[in-house]
Image (cartoon, rainbow over all chains, first blue to last red; front, side, top):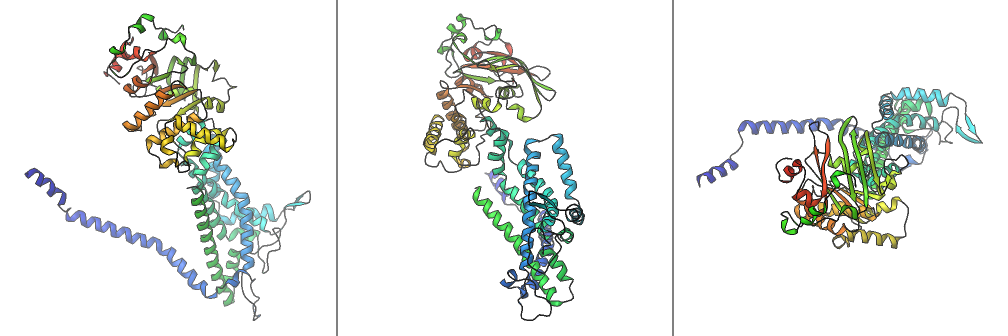
Length: 304
Length: 290
């Protein structure tokens, strides 16, 4: 009886004051640091929205920047949105296949091989190259050199173009895609690969039917991460896409983009352009968030 | 049958009667010379990198029989079974010496197509590893690797496989649900169904019940019992009762002083369990080591 009683007492006996105080202190510290960590994000979003919203209307998507001093014209930056999409499309077409194939090689076909180690090292080095350097590189290789045309098809234009900008952004995207996709491929349990191969599956079949579907969420995250980084890059675009006040006229011509528009307009002497830069920043952030939201939902639906 | 380990004199097998058995239903195994050898292993040594894991293995896996591999942890029995379908090569740098013949063909011949080989020699792993797709697609996976089939035909293959794995009744109403929603035992039987669907000649099982509870284990054992006439089965187990219940031949593996795995004794299960020739086998069976 007494024994049982003592056991019950132990269960209900409060922890020492010291331990409870320490626990409360640590919890408090955790919350505080959490707040400190989200202050920059919150403040950034608040500033962008509060500064950008006043000039926002759906017209910004469908009109080009109104020339200064001409009253009555609807102001907008639809040309920069369209140009940004064109540049990002080129960047994705180049970087997604290259990045994913590199990741598949490092994680599946060449796992633990010397070649894979070399590729991983080179990729890591590439991811550390400053974007302005990548811009100069694309300027030297694409913008500055003569056009290449094979059988009437223009492969590489000369001069500022969406293609040159796309190449520059692709160089920035490849390492992000390759490294994150490799990680998510490696997360797939080896038992899954063995299961497929024990049924007579080749490495190719195993990779594409078992491993990639299971790491689709991680791969998508990697592509989005790369895309959001590229969407906001300004420095490489200054050397490659350049800028125009008009609608883009093709992938082989100078192309307006959102980041360069924000850069130009925020330095402008005219208040109206300064305000438009804020609105453009808000639209850029919203587009990136929207893209990431939509693709996450799509991935979640198709692989559950 | 020149291998001394395989020699069983008629008098020894005749002496065995069921009244002598202590651990379950030990049946006298058929005479080796009446049987077809499905897999013939000679002088097999296997290395992980430079580490020699098993050495000098000689064993015949007979067609239509259940052969159990028993032995203490680290004796190389799992390593051995993974050599039989060359799946061990996927786990890093390995080296194989000796020969492994599958119905007369050396599976380590450079000309051998590994995908075809593994289709003939199926495998069930220690932990259930169903793919995170529907139950139906899991079973159909192996078939689809080698080409498309009309839906009616595929439905039939899936149903037959699930029935032979004694799982059909439990899953027939949720074939399109994820395989991950099944219990551990059901998942393991699904993996067996998946392996059976491609109609292998030999089925290798690497401790298939070690992650299962006793009831699920019993179901898998009943399943092995029902499959023994249709398939050749090689099963690794650390459970001696299981070996005595399901197998007709038993191979006892053990390590020597240098941590290299050897085959100590191989013969009909009843002989290994009741009249083992080697003292180490007797000690292990009686629970004195391992």
